[in-house]
Image: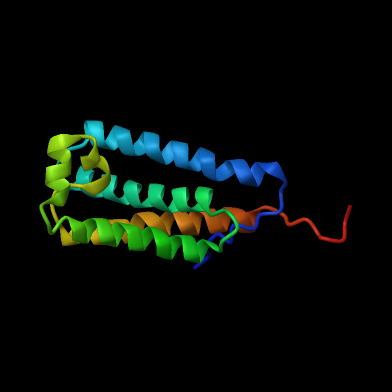
Length: 141
């Protein structure tokens, strides 16, 4: 498995890439949320949520290895899912309905599988993309 390192050597383009990926994933996630219903739509939304969390960690913590961003993203997703065992997410959604997009509504063990697929998938894709770009030598000018 290839996971992005966060140390791309292609100048400013590498710094902008995670922001672009994050924007695309957010738009896709909102589209799935708005259009999708049922089990498949729900799990696709969960996978995109985890991908978004991974990319957000990469954006906010750019010099860390990709595997660490993956661990942080999956830890966040697990914490949010376990929080759904309490009434806190529902109570927050009663006061601020958009909080349901972040905190969810009810525990579902299948969500954990979707989180792993989404976060790991985007980490692997980013890592493969990094490997396909030629590296610049530190000694070349």
